[in-house]
Image (cartoon, rainbow, N blue to C red; front, top):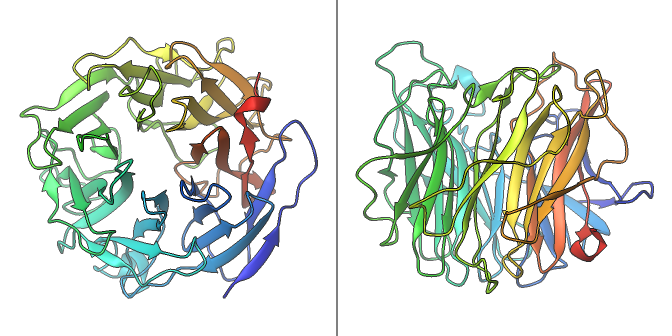
Length: 423
């Protein structure tokens, strides 16, 4: 099924484009991911939970929607990435029985579908990390800037949600060097296991990046810290001990008024550009260092492959007592500029929520902020709102993507922003 969606929006400083709405018989749209094709920047592909693939062939003017299928099931946590060849990949969770939690096969592997025609059609998917009866959750991919070399990292649970203290969670990673056709046997990279409750004591939110030399870096959250690991030989050998590089006050599992659940999981980015900041690593995350009523967005950076990290820089420049949450970051690999999208409540005394973009042109030393949503929304705490948003950037074109909720119904929006239009 292919549907054409024309960008519906009103003109403001930044045009908001609705690309997914609630439809009868479909899962509510949320947890969006987006990527710009480096081989054809007019081609933008988005993934929306649980199984919607939405693409634009014309730089965001029109959008077409298809639905993924796989014998392994399609169960959410979408993550979209392009490789150096221009193929698109849609990583997601599994549900081969299509029965959800009622069937033991739910979350039995990570799945990736590939599109070689710019998001128009998708294959049936490849299986990664099948290891029953253990559960595989929260995948995120990384890609080599020049080669068809990809990584995907995720959390493996002995049993998702189990209370038993002997139940463990670990961070796994797998690689492909042939365009996603085959994937290596997963390797555990964390030293200290977490529990299985999907909370602060769970190792969660692993994000990998790869530099031009094939070095692989991964960051995740664990027990009140941001944790970092790396491999200098393409993923074979890793550090003997996890590096706890920043204190995440209050942990990654947090309470945000009006949301059913929320997190401050880290996002790792790398600058593979020819800029003077090339080679830098960046991590953004949210925490409640300034109190449970004041969630903030932070960034740390390293210019020596993770040996040393800067002190956390507060991204949001508002006063105290307001919430900023659900950040996601990208680095434009042509310019080295950093962009972070997040929700923001600085202008209100209730749960009205805006969307902001922060950007840095000096290697993360300083950031400017701009509101990009046309109007605020109020989430319904009885409805699941998702766990993340996303953003992509290429040669000065930025495409943040986010979920909003109106009268209890979710929709997914994006905007096509030129860096030249930012002050």
